[in-house]
Image (cartoon, rainbow, N blue to C red; front, side):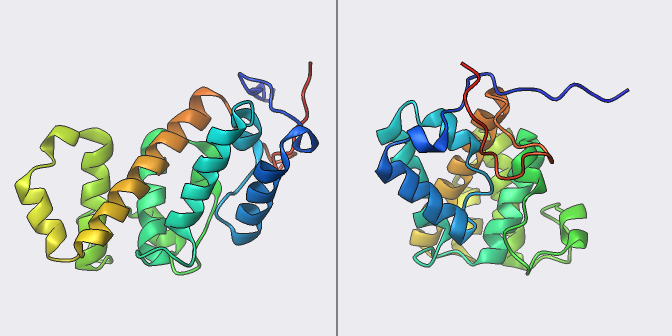
Length: 188
């Protein structure tokens, strides 16, 4: 007996019904690998200006203009996904520099990770699970490995990954194997 495939809690809009600026952002972010699926954005498309801004911010934090290196972002993204349980986030791979062995050992104190990566993973853990623990010592630890601008980017990246993963989870906005692109249409 197979498990029932959950359907999104809010009906996604067909891609063709989204405003052109949002469609262009989705297409660009899918091509760049920033988005793994269009499905959540098709739901968010009911608020197209906000959805467009969200997708643009994802691009700014993950593409060429990003300050943090792809491997570090991928480790942080996957660590946060382990907490949010976002299926798409957990399944997607956005950097060849992160191995499946790395993913299996995504603990901030694992010696396989550089001191910079360990600091970022520890920060991500606290950001998600114990934000009141983020104190002056946390900032001092981050300051040993990151510039101030990089710390701000790390914070924004953690916030986007946490919020996006939780939002996708509560909206049940993930693509199943039979629909890898996430391009579902409205059932209305």
